[in-house]
Image (cartoon, rainbow, N blue to C red; front, side, top):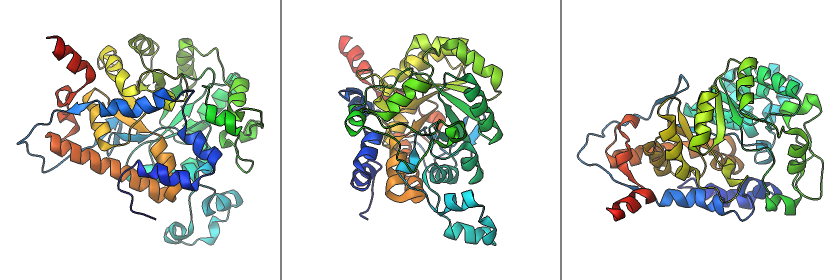
Length: 395
């Protein structure tokens, strides 16, 4: 395999390796895919204002997220069906058949076991000292992910029409040691993802949505368009509203992050309804096309939050410089999605570890070259946005 020098190179390699249906599912956006492109291009329009002659001989990227110490402000977003990217390995077969007894030491286990999909991602995140968010629609269950070892993990939640399913799922996540719920609020219906329609996307027959397997809701029917869109239409509750954020707080003591907020108005409502944090997200540009890039929405949300709760960014992050820009505009951290899937597809757990290390190294370099020895040193004055340039032109 050729040398990989940046995160974006994983996508090209993953495209060569993955079946077309799977690659298109991971890579594509909604309709014209304008927002998909804009999620990246908006970062390129934000420029640096570096400071010099500052001691950066030691760089500290450690931070705290909802009371949990992490090594860096780069975390893993929920991405569904990761075993499509990285097939089942020895771990899952042995896990299912209870053959661990043949291993007589942890050293031997580590040597022979291959962790697949979400299990590999969970281990890579733990190794990097950061947070993994597990999708409701994962191909590994909350219990299986918990079994791979310690780590700080959040659980992403879709609210189903049958609220008993929601109660069971949240309780299972709690019992499996997950530390927060990331409630997705931008998916009353699935966005029109034309690549999935052309490919008649469905979950491959050897895989199931593991968290729903016992409920007989773990598979998708083959349809004339997108099997996932049909699944969402049949199961996800379109009546979800702000009162349900309060309802969730009655069934769990875990903090609730609201994922999918992009405006000041919804920021106020999130705070009023007891959210512990906000993830500024447009669902990877897979829902409503022609919404702004998340980095373009960030300051509006941060300004309205006024420090009352942490605001995170999801979408378009491919460089450590992107992370720096988000932090400068007020984010408490970023979540990354597609880079995880593509690095997982290329090299499994090792790929995800390398991808996270690349972003960490790039952030460290950006901090050093901008004169920031710690995350606290990163300020709004370190970047210039389109809005700044327009305001200065009017002076």
